[in-house]
Length: 303
Image 1 (cartoon, rainbow, N blue to C red):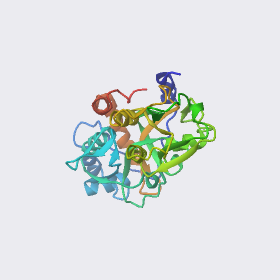
Image 2 (image 1 turned 45 degrees about the horizontal axis):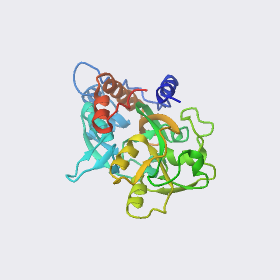
Image 3 (image 1 turned 90 degrees about the vertical axis):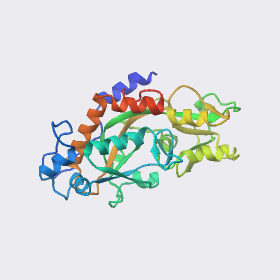
Image 4 (image 1 turned 45 degrees about the vertical axis):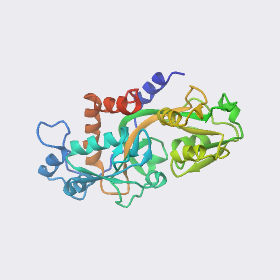
């Protein structure tokens, strides 16, 4: 099945974008003629009790990210965050008119919601799912992603069925782990192409890259395959000294990737409108496509 046709179907469907209620302040437009979003919001009297008002008043947006998730986000030797997500986050902050404060919580804490104000937004390749939408507000997709399997180059596995009963590694609380455990049975927002291997045993690490690190450190019995995105796998394979390869070119599932806000925090309604307009503008002017080509060598921002 072709990814493009599947993701067109995903785009045609309604994204899980939940607007918080109770904000009577009109959200400033990212495409307005003058001033940054926050300059307009402050001038319009955005309440400091809303998420947008809080961010604008502070002049800082706290962004949850992963320092070890290349090529999406990675802390380099110079102490700078680089990657597709990192650039997308910085550009969003610039258009808001605020500076970035990076926060690096465990992924499980991000997807669980109830952030307690420790960060304002997740810009970290979060796939929309029904379960996550119960605790976070998803914004419009900024890119689209499919899940694949990676195996050792010298393995004899050639299909998903070959991995029945085998150990598969994934990052904790990722959609790749969910696919192994549930196959996304009944999901209307994740499109599934292949059922997970029958009887597969899930092995998780705090981050996806820990799976790769364990294998390349010599713990080759830790897992038989790893589940992650194509772009993550390509980066891992390129840095594996020929030890890793794709199981196949066939994806197992595909989904929409979005920024996320905490439902339990300050009113998100005006932030959803304002940041969705920024995302739409970054799609329209080619900014996101440019970041994708720079870091992923393909445009994943279009279905």
